[in-house]
Image (tube, rainbow, N blue to C red):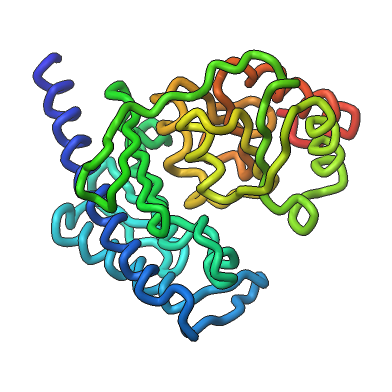
Length: 283
């Protein structure tokens, strides 16, 4: 049994290192095109896609194919390639494409490696190219916060904050005014009234801030699987929590809330209290 556990840990550690390196290389593609007149399109769902999104995902897929050809891959831009192992790589090659298109440096690369037997990700990576910041985690082995563009300068243990009161918390949120429903926007307003500071430093950057102790709450009203894949393991290994709005610890909930853990019950109860009245998002 110990031998099997050790072998699985080694398999995951190898995948984590490849994921970390691949995310940093994909980030260099984004930096190459940033603030240039790059190619961009509007997809059928109204979201923006750029040449950087596509080239980033192509690089990630080539890297995975070379190192783990039998693993499955699901990416935002090029769909799913089924695998024959228990592992599936879930890719958001450029999280925050609209942010990127506007020239704001808070976009990133997201990679999660899902264990299909448990439907959870034991590996997660968030890389913010323009800020040269990366957080990455493996279940049971902690979360690392790294700066220096992949040269491991300043690598340290990522830890959430110790704030225990909502009225001292920094709350972040993503695009409620366009994507959120009326009850979700109402819940945001209720939480905003109870927290100290509110900002829309959003997309993956918001989760990185919570994991590294610079914010306490991050809320997303709508999440695709590639948005959520790395978040649960990163937040948990940093000492925090990631669930859907009903409080379920899942990456498949289509919405997300991350906290420093100490505030999670209070935040979810606020969300659930309003949702119970309206009959939404509560199992």
